[in-house]
Figure 1: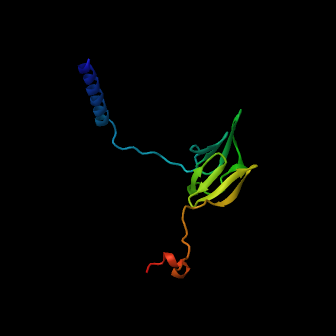
Figure 2: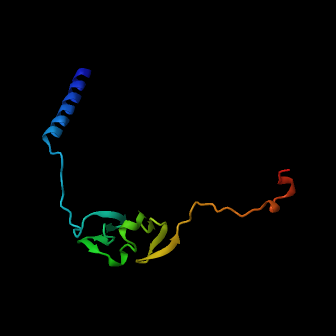
Figure 3: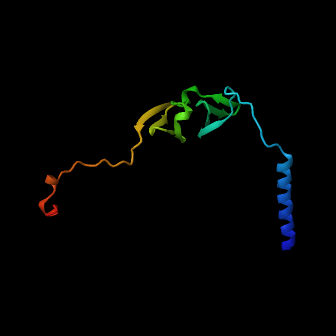
Length: 128
């Protein structure tokens, strides 16, 4: 049984090698930036394409939702959720009642040092 399995593995590897050897080594594709098609994110029954434009799926097909377009260029989007968007600069946007609302910068994890001098230390904590 193991010899048979080994034979199938060898035949599979041989088929892969032959496909690579007989196949093309380079490909190219024509790219038209005006052609729609790539979906970047989904919010419920709405999709956002690579231009940041929102589309709604109803019973008859796709309908453009101009009020739901992203408020920033798609290249500035770090995270896109159902009703939230975070930019690469950590600014948050919230989608509410058909429009995007800027809620501000996401809280950072940086800890700012407090200015403290030796004079403000209690006497028992100062080194002798």
